[in-house]
Image (cartoon, rainbow, N blue to C red; front, top):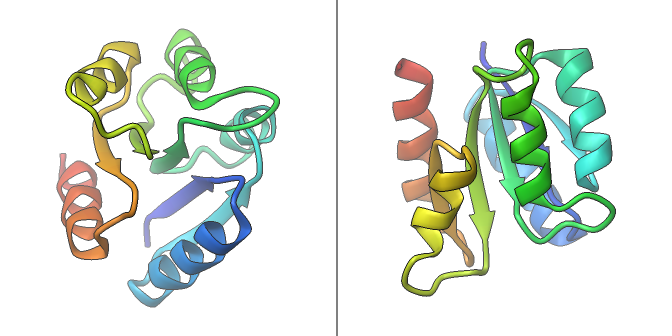
Length: 121
């Protein structure tokens, strides 16, 4: 069973995604901001992180850079979850080290496909 860390500050989004992922059979841990997300990533070593880019305390951009700079965490797959959905935003997420990108509002079927594809790699 794959472990997913969901880092999302919006309670409704966090709870909806947590329930959905659990129904798909994943073990899910949640964090409210990037600082807590980094701590849990170090503690749990998840297989994949779903990461809101617009977080308080430490945003998703900075958290991704910190993950990639840490040899223990650098190989964890990261999917950016963001309301930034303009031209170039996907490329910007990939450039800082995210493996994939899902624009909000999230299409759950698309998210599932992207999670499964990354976990197969």
